Length: 355
Image 1 (cartoon, rainbow, N blue to C red):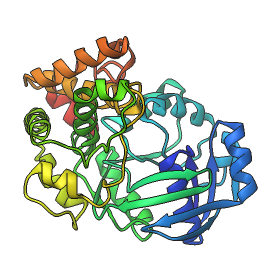
Image 2: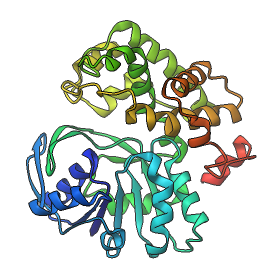
Image 3: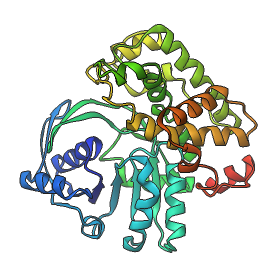
């Protein structure tokens, strides 16, 4: 199969490098021409850490048509905020039976991507899927060199509609055996663990980050903050259950995704997970861990919870505090029910829509 990877950040370079290393034909797109120029001079991606080797990239470009015209599978690794705009830009370029996988979809990424195609009058049969999280824990050391800190053992994958998942998995499973079928996109959406971890850690360390004091994002976890995260997470679990979806709690999820993690409590597992060990906190509070995870994670989960009659006061508080802290109206900019094509739908109608 031929792949296109959209977005040459940490995840995109890791994914493109892995596919090239496995001798698959892969194109890599990024809209930044300077980044494209540097990566093109190297001809591919050097992987270090858990995966080692050089992955040859067939074409590295900032021209979207060049990247996707022959692709069987389009792996999207951009920030989730870009999904709808990307869908609208891709719409005239897509052909029947192409697969688009959002890595990850965050919360309701597939729904927002579909809205982008609808608004652009795309009439092709496109298989849209979203991963619950990125397969890799990774960091770019320099352009074209990526350190693979960890590789997840299990990653849920859903399709929209859910009946398309068998087709998608049949195509991709030999390359990514870690992908397993999720019942629908609400399952992967509510399993957006990053939207639970990231905002809580940033908020409780905002002053430290503002002062420019370096610390480890997970390794420096404390029992009190971990306890808050679990209370926050309980609201996510309750909202998912209202839609008939059983969710792993954050403590269980770490053991599911990273089987070699040692510890009993959430705090112990966050501190001891080898894939998390060397990840530093961001240098600014204006980080994707708020600017992306609030509008594409916290907000849509809260919106879905309200439709199901679930009160989520901690989610509401985190959303409001982050909006004030960053001076951003996330309710205007984020994934509201209207932006997802779910406005005025009941819980039952939403479930029918995604099947």
